[in-house]
Each structure stands twice: as C-alpha cells, then as structure tokens.
Image (tube, rainbow, N blue to C red):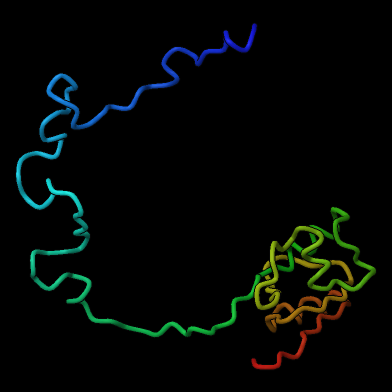
Length: 156
C-alpha cells in the first residue's frame, strides 16, 4: 500500500448534486424550487410569517417572568457524594469542599456555587462545606454524625 493507492471505500463518498446547471443535470432550470412565488426567489426568510395575519406567537398571552440575574447552582445529591467516598474518589476524613467535588469529577463546573440535596443515603461521617444545601440534606448529614456548613452568600 502506497500513498497514491489510497482510495475511499466504494460508496463512501457520494458526489453532491449540482443544482441549476442545465437540463442534463436532472436539477436544471428551476433547480428543484418549483415555479414562481416567494419561495422560488433567493433571500427568503419566512419562519412564522403568516401572510400578514397576526402570527400565532403574538396572538397568545404572555405569562411569567424570567429573572435576568438569577443564580444557577450546580446540584449534587448526598447519595452520589457517598458513592464517591466509597469509591475512594473523595476523602471522607478531610473536609469536602466545592473544589474537592470538582477535582473528584462529581461536579463539572461551579456556576454560582454548589448546592447539596438530600436524595440518597449517607452513612459516612462527612464534613461538607458548600454554597447551599436543603434542610433535609443538612439533617441527613448530621444524623450520620457529620456536619454540613453553607457559606454565607453576600447577595442571597
């Protein structure tokens, strides 16, 4: 096998149909766009346009409000923390901080902080310090003999 002998597998590379290149090409003249009308012309963008009638998205009532500066927390469940401790990816004896959670691969990125939720069982005595936690998560960690502290947020 030499470089000049390399070929694609048969059928792997299919040539693109050249549109609007004469009657012999099979897509000549109107180039597959039909005859006349707005959509046969170039420069047409008519998504959601209803021919001058008020579009559906404008006829429907608007509800709710999306807070532009809302906080987004990375969420971790207690059961997952316990699983990572058992797998040896997190050290139960040392304090489990947000950086430790990221380093272990349990959380991908911090966002506005990490919030611990109570899903799953926790059996180890853990010392966790994160941005936020649910009441049930705090209770579950304390029941197992550990502590869960939340960092005081400046603008919470």
